[in-house]
Length: 580
Image (cartoon, rainbow, N blue to C red; front, side, top):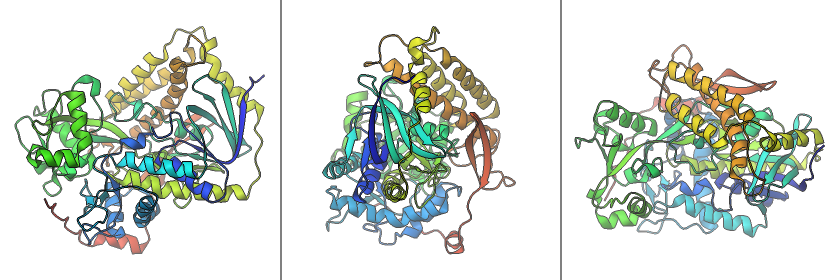
């Protein structure tokens, strides 16, 4: 028998209120659908605010030679050509319009002397392409989208955790979850659902991600029957804070290198001159992260096991103007004045290139009525995301998913919410209070994070991955014995238990796919298979549920049409040198 729950009804339910979720809600509401936007935290506190460097879009304001074609090529090359070419094409073509749209909604950007949106260089982008607001671009994006969401009258439910997608037959009928404040159960009856819950960095011990990044949306989609594409592709941002221990993993924006910062080893050598003489510090993130790792392994690392990042040569005025957040972050958290001394940095888990498989044009998953956008959706970034592409991704595909969900809901009736599914989820949620087990959810989470950091991190091999998988499967058994004391009101241990189930599901997918991909490609670096597998070719790995058991399959990367593939046969243009 089910416990009482509150029911909300709408046409489109959007789960996640970061950039992708708000952009989807804005589009769906603008198309006439009734929309409810749900978030685990408070509106405006999404992880999008941590994206600092800029929005990648080929405006050509600083480098007129830039074009959507070059942006497309950069994105595909960065992703080691296992990206979905159609997503990369749509992204490159539409990003400029989405940036200008933000501007019409009130976003404030840094400006060129003649008043156009300023653009800065970034890793693996051929031209200066990132539209920015100092190093606080994500915050400005969220502020602008939040104002637009509120102005459209979108209903927003904050501090609500959604834990299960509800289905009527094969299609989505809504979702179920609870209020984080008092633990009261909440059901949503909707014609369509958009997953925009971000990534899963909290699965690892050292990450730039905030506490929300536990893979909920992708986990729910997987449990509902959706496919998970390339879960092994996890990005290690080369520059996270390293010292003191309490700040380890906090992001040091790529804008530091975009503005001219140098990476040096303990001997004062700019080692990126050796690893990528052409792009240097602005090589792709996978290349820079591996370079720092190698320097440390060869005994040339900084005192705490990383590298030095210097900007002193830019001058104090430039640093405080162009990198105000970084200046304040290091001064307050590490007692380091970056105008006078170097930062100490090391790779940190930053982004999931993998996620729910979606159709490029619509964001539709393999489950009817279920859509996804942003970091929860896969395909655009392939084996490695370029800096700045995440923010334009949110705008382009958040809009497309919202529009497609609004169109879909016009042609279907609302499905029924089946009490059996709700009762099953309530039983699962209440189990930790009733269990006589002795397991602690926090300790299990720590064990998972340690196992993933040691076995499935930047440098991988068969032995480490198999040990990691064994630990993940062990933790999946032990979570059934978790006991949580107290009530459902303000109970973080209870929240952690349900989050941990999603984290363990995603962790299994990451490790199984990493074991099967016996090659090095982009962010996936196998020490025992250092080259790309020519026999395997360019394939995507897909995790799916087979009667509750995880299975993997491969699928060839979609072939590009000739008009796009021919772009890769032409000489690559030389990047412009940054002007003072």
